[in-house]
Length: 360
View 1: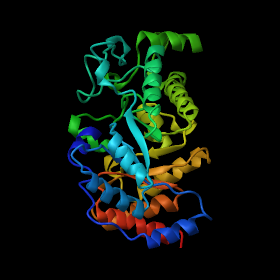
View 2 (view 1 turned 180 degrees about the horizontal axis):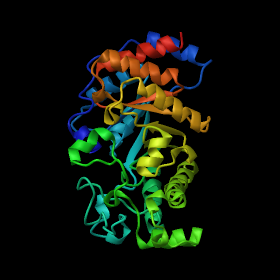
View 3 (view 1 turned 120 degrees about the vertical axis):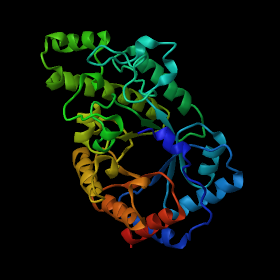
View 4 (view 1 turned 135 degrees about the vertical axis):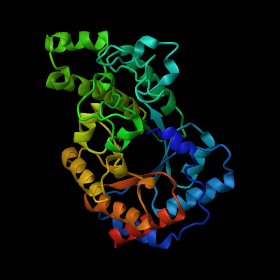
């Protein structure tokens, strides 16, 4: 599912009214006795926004308990406006899914088990162009990108997305879209089998990947790929912390799903927070599954860093379900929530009232 298309459909259409501050102020005072809560919004800055609209929106966010915004694109005006109203302003980037280098460095792109490169044969959709994390030049490129972003004084941190391999298994609700059934790992979606990956795997494990009859079942090969992503993430984390800025990531909903579907081992990353995308509708689950997913993530993180439950607002049928999702996230140990979708005044009021209730 293309996040960029979701955003273009019109996220955050404008919040018309300021919510009352009194209740939240009381909650913040009471919250001093509890763990620190942060709540986020994923969005793309719209250059058509007026300064007055930004002021109204960000005051409303702050009043409702939103503490930070994850911006998909750079816009100094939006970042500074958010900061002026007490919000953290972080830059949200696509990490390994990068189409812009295809014509310049086609050799940097991942190959599937059939040997096809996503530089010229992308899986699922045309924008799925995945860089290979085994290549030092890819890591160096991403390190420079993050450095350049964090050098800007108005950016408070970096938020990583698509920080993984291509989906070897899609969320079940998407199978019909692509007319596939992924009850097993299909070779055309299994990455990366390029020559660099093969050589580094042999160097580490003393085994030729070609000699493994069923590489999709090899635990060593799977661990190699987990560690590939983790190495790059932790390098980017070091850069963020050298800048004295925060680093977070959007990840798959649970540690088990993340490892199985996209070779993402996020509980072993060095982050300041993680936003699992607990999009229950993608997995044909009920709202109650949000609590289960949060509980699993919190358990395996074991206090390493905070978990903020990512909620996709279009998955909810009504405000009652949104309230239930927020309640389940907090009840099961989340340090906050992150909203993706149209954050209406009603959504903000739900968050505000739940924070007041939580800290009452």
